[in-house]
Amino acid sequence: MATSGAHIEAALRRTMVGQLETWGADTGIALDPAVLDAMLLVSRAHFTRGAAPEDAYDAHAAIVTKRDPAGLAISSVSAPTIVAMMVTQLAVRPGHRVLEIGSGGYNAALLRELVGPSGQVTTLDVDPDVATGALERLRSAGYEDVEVRFADGEFGAPDRALFDRIVVTVEAADVPPAWVGQLRPGGRLVVPLRMCGLTRSVAFTDVEGVLVSSGYELCGFVPMQGAGEHREQRVPLAEGVELRLDDGQRADGEALRSALAGSRAEVGTGLRVANQEPFTEHLDLWLATMLPGFGLLTAGAAAVDRGLVNPAWPGGRTPAITRGGTLAYRSWRRFDGGAEVRVTAHGPDAADVAAEFAQAHRVWAGTRRPGSPARIAVYPAGTPDAELPAGYRLDRRHSRTVITWS
Image (cartoon, rainbow, N blue to C red; front, side):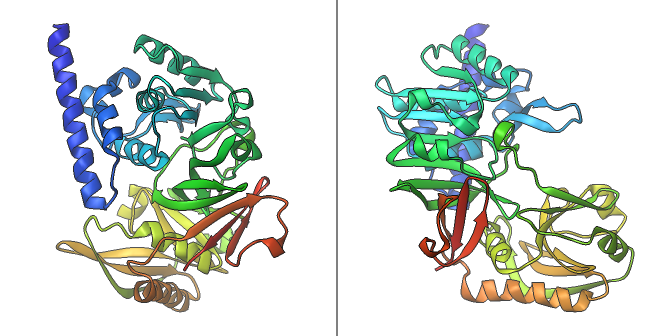
């Protein structure tokens, strides 16, 4: 029976890797064959105990492993698509010393396979339950030499530095000095960095103490806990509807709540996208850095079903802007094979704000699509303005991030 079960699981892993290859081809993300080989070797089911096998090996399924008292996910095993993409970004090679911040065990096992006998992997988590679970699962899977620590990721693992690679598997709003200081010169940091409310898995290379991006991908993660916790502002607009703001943005919640109860305006952008076309990772970040008052609208199915709002991504985060008591957000008009990008607005200046947001989409489509990605650079917090390049600046406690578009 055990042999039969092992054969079944091996077949599920092969199916998962086949799904990843298809996903990579569809999205244009070139996954590292060495990473896929490691995913054939490591049992994801072992690190997602309690999940059904078909869920454990669903290439697009994240498995929540712990929730807080309110029911919000605070720890998970990321979807295989995200794992394969981020570990590919990390560019791990045999002999590397790797630090993982945010542990579940599965990633650490993959990294151990990739660094080989001459490499070393340290993984840590601020939650003692998560760290203990990762340790138990890694040891029972035979990964005796992966070092597991219960520690706050904000401070890294100074006694183990320097690291060739650091990967962060929780959403971070800042880059603390420990991550830069513990990275070998020329080393690589991959982190799901939240910028203007948008999270992107950014691959950074250390260039004389400045982190310079070599690329980024769309992603979603549970937020960081501990000393580095930095939550967004949530503005409730109606039952099941919120506006999420970041980086000092402000909104008149009372006026926007009134606006939703009134009439709306809707305009087209002329921008058409095919099903599965990856376009938002650049467009949304561009909008966020070009338009004041940027935020993200979230709406539950019930609010959409009763016609209160019609966002492009019901249940997800839809780009929006506010102007006083007026709210505009992205919506769709679907057709066979794709959709037209539209804008819906509510409030006293709905027509004007809808037109402004729609025009921004047209400008992006005309000047940037498919366009090159932004260049993201992270400097120490004390860096003077005169030493920063031109671009959109995000100031956080530990860092100054500059986003520029060529």
